[in-house]
Image 1 (tube, rainbow over the protein chains, first blue to last red):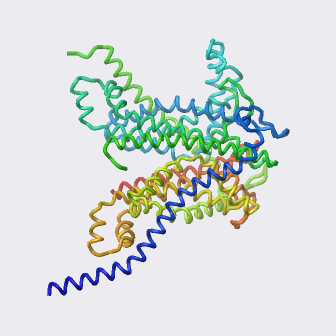
Image 2: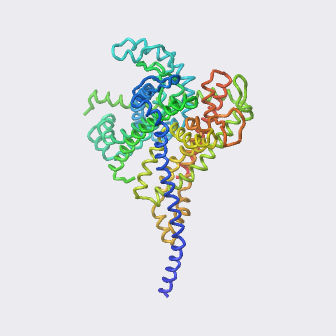
Length: 327
Length: 277
């Protein structure tokens, strides 16, 4: 009887497996195809940017990156100004966002009363949920006039005549410019860096911190000598993640950067960024070369953010490995 | 033994800095939300939801833009969500521990943060150039590309949270793998997967850059996906950049509705997710 039962159930299982095998294979194929699709998408994006920009690269060669003339009338396109503007605004953003994000992470893991941690963390995450066009509008109508009236006159009066940093802060206080754009970008990347930093701070093994406490460390010493060294690679990863966001951010920057193709040392002056130039000019590009130049800009942006985000991801994976997690 | 003054001061400074940093972050959130609320609430009128976008210098509403946005978000959802769930399933289940899965997972995280303007350019090259004109269809595809990596990531994470015992229980019943996935794992992870999809919708609702040269904009009522389609973010962009006061007011009204939609969706999703746990 046992044998028959076993045979029966064996039969049931095997028919099941047989009828299931085809469907199983199909299901696996469909999901694998979807996964391949994600890969293809990235590859196709890179290829189509390179293809669309080939005319600009062929025409200008290295001058496309080093030339500072962006002249649609004479069909000369050098992207130095937007590249410079992208790098400077992103640098300002990181100078603001990195310390603030680490401060927020510290506050949320060690200092804030327990009941207030979740609501504050959600509020900080909501900063990332606000659409970038809202940052742009607020920047243009509220923040730029505020900078022009209150902050920039002070900067150019007090710092504009200083020896080395003077040129950075000279010029008329018009509100629109690299400093304003950099600050808005900084606010926008705070939630990305702060969220990762908070996660890794709270994943520091308690015994490490407890040992430091037992040795009489203060909170500052725990942060600077235990938490930060232990989470260093993840924090660097978080910073690169923020950098990747800042480099590619479009709408907010388009509103407050001023779309000017002049190279100026002063942070108070309008400038341009890669993303803003594409957003402003692409639908107006009336020649093949103009359009190709803008797509070539897109290609540069894509390659740079790809590299930055790859570094971010590798740094973040490293800390997982350190914890012995595989994923 | 008392702690030396120098160390106490450093500690107090760190404490103060952390608190100030948090206040700094919250300060901007409230300033931006307050501005949007104040400027937007006063611009809200019944015409906003009944009239079309006006020509310069006259009043009107955003009906065509709301419609266009809704259609393109729906299109993005219909295209992006199924592919995203399937790819996420591969990463967490069928392709787990394969080389392909780890590469895709890595690349997906990069797509997640990739500049959305580049996605707009890509869809322009692929769809708009091929078709010869701007279209709501192209806009929907661009939004699907933004949604996709979000759904992939959250689906993968949701499935990984399902305990292995549930898989083993399914296999012990003799179920083939696809039925284990479909009937047990999807059920267990349903609320987390839906959370991811809704967060993705909140994200694409505010995306402007990928629509600038795919859907473009349309001042008039158009229900066709095959031509330029009005949408809230691009209308806000164009109106805010214009010199007309009426347009600025409409831009604020649109900004208010958009922000309210995105924030409410975000908060609801978080509440639901917490309840689910």
